[in-house]
Length: 540
Image (cartoon, rainbow, N blue to C red; front, side, top):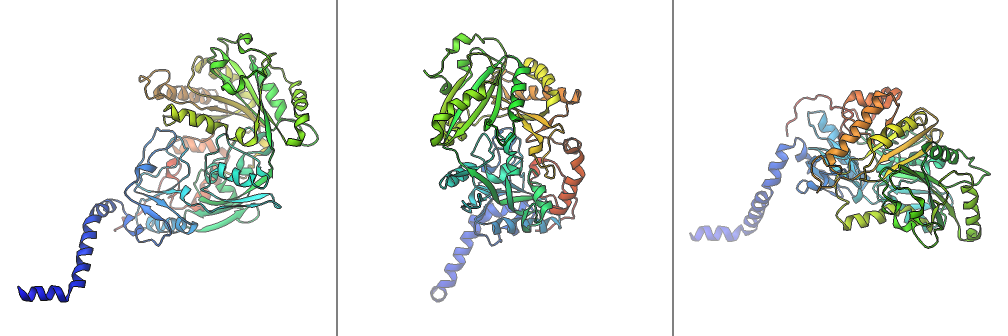
């Protein structure tokens, strides 16, 4: 016994180390068992990263804004640099050659609708943890921004020097890389095009793990592939975004129509005005009121003030499908005395219901961030984190009246589950070299059914997720049956034949780009566009 005690004293350092190692192994056994289920995950724990991979708390990346699909990843990467992203993708690309089924999805603000930013059993990259900072070049009129930054953060940074991006989305709490992987549209797109046409350079991590810079003149094929490419060819880690002088304030105007033909004619005339030499609105959108029990219950209360010349009740619109044209005119403080005159002149060419002009004046930031204000109110009411069975369609101009008759006045008649946007865009403001697809006509309409389901609604009830998704299917069936030439924006297809039809003449090129930049099909599996190629088994 004495000899054993003496041995322990003489080797106490070794004994303590052994006890520490055993304790760590016991505490990590759960993780080891988890990794044993995931082919290749064990090797990822050995990556030299500035950030880290969390293999435990993966539920945070299993859902999205749509609240419809759940897909649990094996791990979540919280990168601190582009090197972290490249290291992960390179490792998974190499593992794919030996049979690993690991995939990678870049997750921004998780505003996808049907699992597009999910990677079941794979690795999700939390892009928001990679804040690379924002550099604004006032003289060059551009900003360099990390792909994980939010547009609201970019706006705040550029406003410090009196500048702002040209093209927007209606909601600013989205990542730069996320919207550029789709298109990024709002009421400014008729003038400036979508966000993807207002980018000078990109930094991209391809599906092989290569870190490449690209532009229209350097690695142009990758540049055009990634913009609107649904995350299939690379992860956007940095972007150089075009800027313009930022206005100080905005006149925000809404007018009403009861005749759809008149409504669309006025919208089309507004977006067709010459850009130079003629005064025009800076933003043009619209929405449909299909369940009108009085405007007060449908419009934001900010539009009802003592300055409005006509009482809402005097419009006598109850029970009618109405169309609202929404416009803004931006201005600087020094032009305040002239802005009302300009608005009056612009409105004089429109044919809305007499007395239905509602106008408010607010700062440029307040206007751009308007949806976030509504978000805060809905969160307080518990109505934000609910299922969102949204459907966004691009409808050719020649078919929009047929769409109105069948969808707005029939399928959606007497429903009230969220905004229904409708506004036209000019196709010549889009770059056909890019992956994003649109209808082939010169003018097409964005129709957004931005509806929310109530969890408390009985199954099949008019505000239930099942009912709203059934309506979406009826709308899509109608469009397909009648050959409307409609394209989905933020598409939600699940078969290769559907994707081929969606991309049309761009499909072959799209497939070739995939083979070039992501040959193992490890990127953005949640889009469900490409299947993984068969590989031989891989041992841990």
